[in-house]
Length: 199
Length: 386
Image (cartoon, rainbow over all chains, first blue to last red; front, side, top):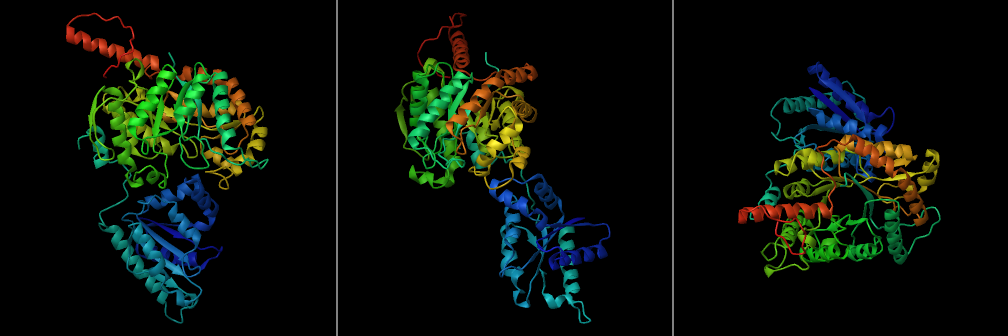
């Protein structure tokens, strides 16, 4: 089981990457053999902007895109900027092939400076992944400042564990039965009309 | 016999010169294009191809007009397009315009078909941009028949039907102009080229080679599938882009402001990253030769290499200097490509070779019909149905 976490945390010790690592701990606790890698979009900020401008990925960005494509499941976490995900986060997903995430199991998480952003995953991240036809698990995790203190209960950890349970279950099952396929379809209507104009 | 053709292709953009801040007029740009084409012949290039666009900042809306004018002032260079818009031009007009050009320049032409249109362009010509692939296929199927059959009865989706229609003039020597199909992302275009045994061209600029390898390989396989020869015999053309000076550092210093402000890639990656990641060479003539030769490693030995030189606001004076330098390395490029070229690779397409093939085909038909072995092999100017 190979799981890649995409983190759009912007500061060096970011709470968003901290949240990604919580997923990693929860995964290792139940699947010690699984690999878990965290990709930080901050490190790729210039590559992502260049890809937006020229339409192709630099070798460094392409390496990360290949990691995402090869993953059995993704954890995707973003901070909340102005009531949504950061522009860089969107630009990264804009750089992917439109079909790349079809059927990919995904757990979504977000951090925010106030609990009032707590629905940001549902109104901002989910529509993006719905468009990309990813298989997003029902439990998402939003971490506001007070979630990082436990007050004797680890509610955040509990939600992460629940999300990871759903993610592994989907990834180890049949998923949607559809995945990214970039082979050329020789039997599409337009393709067939070339060798048989009468069609 | 031409093993491989080298030439120029131009987009025909009017781009401000970022160094001196001036912008040439449309009149100057059109006249400069002619000067560049004549220079291409002077330095020994085989092909000059112009784009077709119908919106600013581009000037070449009427390729056959420009090519005929160039043809009248040149002797040897093959005139072509990069690309002729198969989507928004009426195939009847393409058949007639390019056949006329073919007669005027005695067969010294071919054309490259492409879509090359943004969505707003289609409605200007009465078409729906969401049907671009379907338009490409239907228009080309009709164009093929208009050139290959003397009398055409036709009905399709996108054009009024034709009854008993003859496109005039008929192709010169009974051999229709050779057709290239240019595309960088549409498998249907590669399939179309393969089905008819036509050439396939990948512009090979602005993107890493990996983007082009897939469709070129697909085209080669499908060319063989349709019985035109082996995959290695398929007719492939590639673009390329360079800026050279005797000293590599001079090339980088002089080209950088044009690179940094260029349409398409300007304000993005550094010149160093972009040259490392795409077919662009900015450096010495030797670096240019070495990089160009790698194209055959990636895409297989091929028939036509076109370079984009006049773009990004480069003044015509610099473009002509670049062509002088290209002329100096051209003999080496030809020799190196020929040295590595296996026997089983097709020669580049020429009118003479197509006439010979059409004549052989006609003799074969006549022999089959008459049961006799006659046939002089002479070329008359009647139409021949393939």
